[in-house]
Image (cartoon, rainbow, N blue to C red; front, side, top):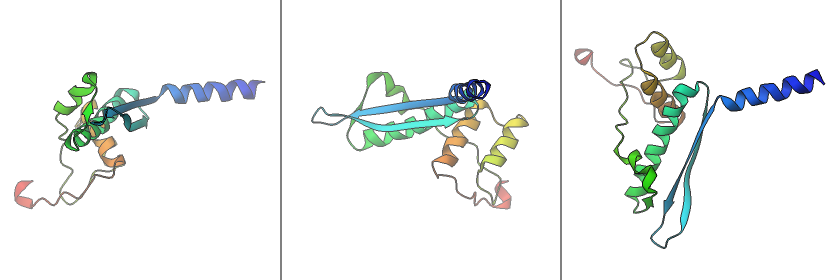
Length: 133
């Protein structure tokens, strides 16, 4: 009985630390389609920004393809999704982003955007020159 209670408590705790979001788009025919369904698990105060980043990319892609999105989600089209550059010769990864966040060099929003950026496979090596450092 105690094991069952602990299992249920653990599941509820994990579910509470999860941020999710969906984005529907509408085709010219009027058909409504689920374009994106995203979920990030970790720090809810940061993950909400990861969800925002992923949904914004999805919204922008859907509109670029000629679809329309729900009015209440149109704000996603205006978001500035720029993230700080990683160090020269490196790409963002979870360890480096977490270190930068914990030392106060990244805001919650920047950290969330970077987490989504990494998880979506968009992280690339920063090919900056020593002059631009």
